[in-house]
Image: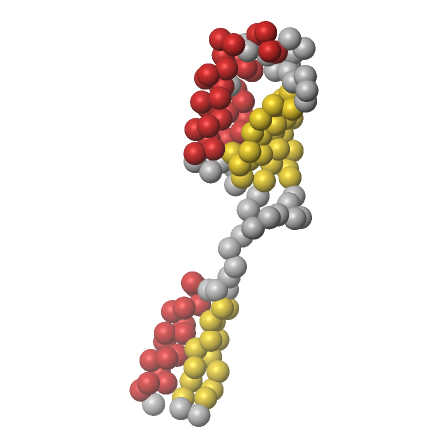
Length: 134
């Protein structure tokens, strides 16, 4: 029948847009069943900085630019959290979301703390979230 043919064509068109599309016979013809694929889960990574021992005395001329760069990435949704670690401060930590390692490396290379030798070492590692508040 004509409606059945139309439904089969629509179902065929839906296949590239969904993870599954199939037809199921019904009393009135054919029903197109489609399931949309779930979005990929977010990916996270942690960037950690180790600061020079006298960071509080040396960071002054570079701090505004350092903070502005981190806030700009946060405004784009790239940085979820960032801040100093320790008391007294011994390093920094940045939680990145859905960002490539290349993007983070570009951030590090342009960071005034790194360019002015206030960060003698840093690491970037993948971070797997297993619990999260809603």
